[in-house]
Amino acid sequence: MGFAFQDRFNRIDGGDIALQIRERAESGRVTLPYYYYDILAHGVPVGKISIRIGDNFHTYYNGHIGYEVDPEFRGHGYARRACALVLDVARFHGMTRLYITCAEDNAPSWRTIEGLGGKLLEVCEMPREYFAWYEGIPRHRMYQLDL
Image (tube, rainbow, N blue to C red; front, side, top):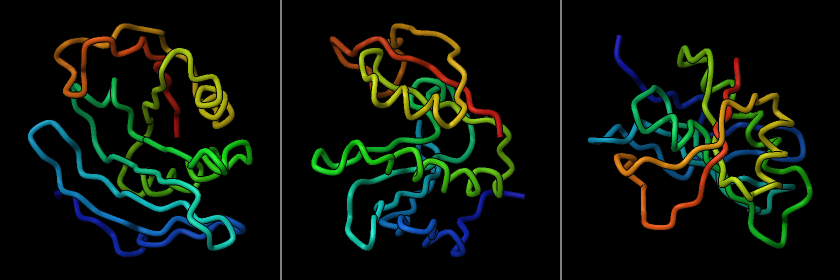
């Protein structure tokens, strides 16, 4: 059976935060299908999060979850809580583990990942074969989160 987006995940409520779908994208040459959400806190957009479904070479470096919280809303745990909400999407699609990555020096992000239960696999250079590689890309912390 192939991958199919689920309308049930267009909005995910989690108490004082919610995720509202912005985009759903099919897989591409190097990308996986993904759900992309606005993170809402008390109805106000505070950031964005995506969950990529499946695995390929780039997943290990790009991660299954990508998030950003707007600067004025950082420090309130929105990223961690939004990540926790998308775990059910991954589970529904049969995933049993996720990779989540961040730049080596991004302490708020690695604290978020570790707060979710992510286990550090390594800190590594990004390979030139990685689709998002660029000259000067920082070393990244690679985590695995078992579902």
